[in-house]
Image (cartoon, rainbow, N blue to C red; front, side, top):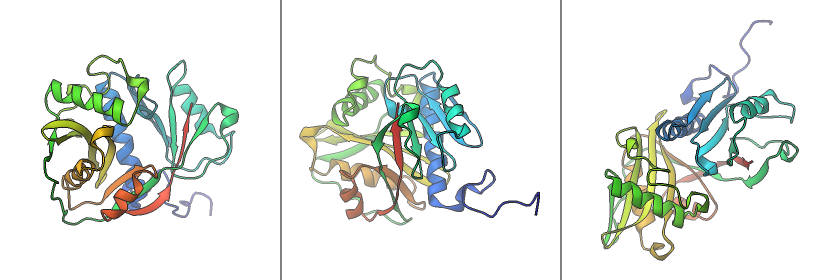
Length: 263
């Protein structure tokens, strides 16, 4: 009947955030993007159809639109909303969709791939760091500078090379709710693992390890440290196929694949 609420599909504007873990992830990721953008003196906004954040850095993943519903055709108004928000921006921008999308090449987008959402249910961790491995939150300017070096060289994100100190992770993030952890090997910072707790999930937002420190237990220690931030909540991450086996080994389950575009 006219005026009745549509049948619930999990992505209506008034659907509860905790309807599905996928919806919780979308809201958590959007909030994490906004925290970073605000800390970097960027901009953030949202509409009924999309979350938007512009960190004003050359890193594509920090300038991101996250769809709040499926995009079905190139003429969809949500693409106009994204264009308007990023109007005049000459730095790379990403579009993240929980669903398959039409081919957006005609609108200037290039397909990055289909990262996997992995989820671990609530429960105790099995964190026993390997010898010479330690984890600590970034608190000082030196910590944040080390985190920036690691993500530029270890991810890698060459677009961020040469940014001034604080150009990726400003110290203002301390106590913001967006946590950056350093992984140490023999006392030296060699890896980072970022997290954000919101929408009743722990989001493992970003991880990177310097090449010479890989496969020595630092990445795994950072995963457990972030899960242990709120072990009573599910832990979520969206990951490449390179990191997927490590997550599955640690009890995460692959749930779905996203669609990621860059322009």
